[in-house]
Length: 181
Length: 212
Image (cartoon, rainbow over all chains, first blue to last red; front, side):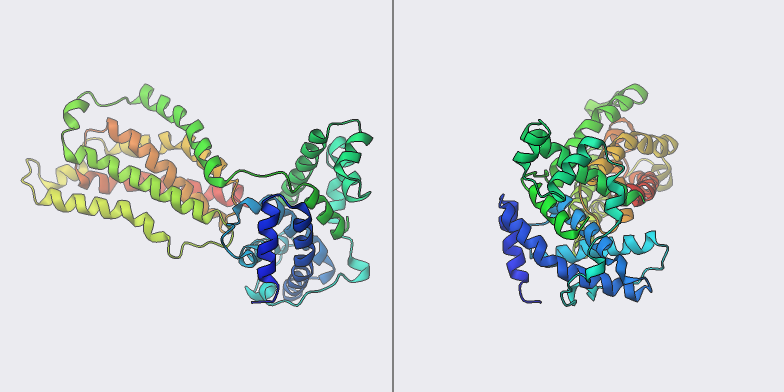
C-alpha cells in the first residue's frame, strides 16, 4: 500500500461528515495518482496520453457523485481505484479501443503532475456549452472565476440554496452527458 | 476546464449528501409494488381455497422460497452497488432459495402422495406460471433498476441480472398466492424458468442503464 492511503481514508471520513476543506484536500491529493494511472492505461492501449486529463476529470466526477457508495469503515483507496478503472475502461471503449486495463494501473502508479500543455481538458469544457444557461453560469462562476457560493448567489440574484441546486444539477448532467457520449 | 477548477467545484458541492442505495432501492420497490399487486388482483387474484391451503405446509413453503430469493437478491444487489465489490463470498446467498426447494422436494418424497411424481411436476398451471411471473415482475424490475442506478456497480449486466432476481422473487410471491400447484417439484421446475427469463431481461437492460 502506498503511503498516504490511510490519510485519504481519514480525509474522506471528514469530508463525508461535512468538512469541505478536507474534501478539497483529498481530491487534490488523489489527482496526481489518478493522472499517472490514466496515462499508463492510455499508453498501454496505444492512445495518446494527452487525453489523460479528460479521464481524470471523468473519474473525479464519478467519485463525487457516487461517494455515498463508499463504506466509511472500509479503506478509501480500493474504492477509488475501482471507480478509476471503470472510468478508464469507459474512456477507452468510447474511443473504440480494445480494452486492456491492468488492475495495477492505478494502485501502483507514481503521482504525476500535469504536463503544462495538457493541464486543461476539453471534454468537459465542450459539454459545458450544452448545459442550460443558468446551470452553466453558476458552474463557471464557481469553477472558473472561483467565486464562493454566497457571492455567486448575490451576483445572479439567487438564493444560496438555488445556487447549490443549480451547481449539483450541472455536475449531474455533465456526468450523464459524458456517459452518453 | 482545468482539473484544479473542477476540484474546487466538487468541493463546493460537498454539503450535498446523497441517500444510501438501500433506501432508494426500498422506495423504488415500494413505489412499483402497488402496480404489480393491481395487475395481480385484476388478472389472477388469490386462489379461492386460500384459507384451507394455508394449512398445507407446501403452500406456505412457496412463499418462503420466493421471499428467500427476493431477500437474498436484495442483499447481494446492495453489496454489488459498491464499485469495488464482487460476487465472491456473497454469491452463495443466492443458493438459499435453491436449498429450500431441495429440502422441500426431499420432505415431499418422504410423504405418501396421491398423485404420481410427473403429474405433480407438470401440474396444471405451468403456462400461466411462466407468463404471470414475468409480467408481474416488470413494474418491480423497473423499480429495482431505478433503485440500483443510484449505486455504482462495476459489472452493470450482473447487477441488472440480480435486479431481475429481486423482481422475479417478489412477482413469484404474488403468483404463488394464485397458483394451486403446491408441489415443490412444480415450483422447482416452472418458477426457475420464469425467473431465468426475468433475469435475462434484467441483465440486458442493466448493461445499459446501470453504468455509472
